Length: 98
Image (cartoon, rainbow, N blue to C red; front, side):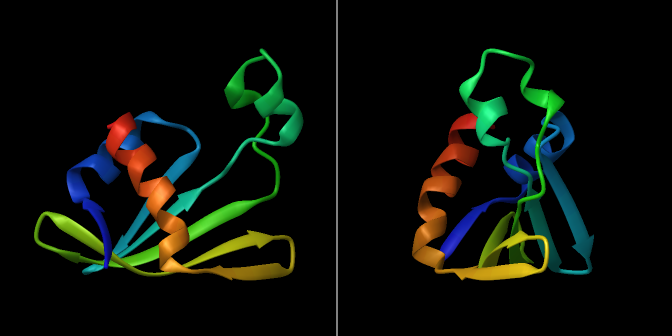
């Protein structure tokens, strides 16, 4: 099971422009817009260009924790499923950022 603190997700989504949190009842979607290669490799303002790619992470809120059930990388009309194991690095980043 891959999970993260609900409060940490809310803090990240409200303070970082690359994150968006969508809630419908207990269902939670986290959208992460990674920077483009050019933006990530330069010293320019990070917020300037996020590109077309979105990482969509879907889960269920259970009390103070969100348990993730599926994840995708989407770009244009393409959609690739991520394994939950692939989310571990991202969860570590959330824990560090929040």
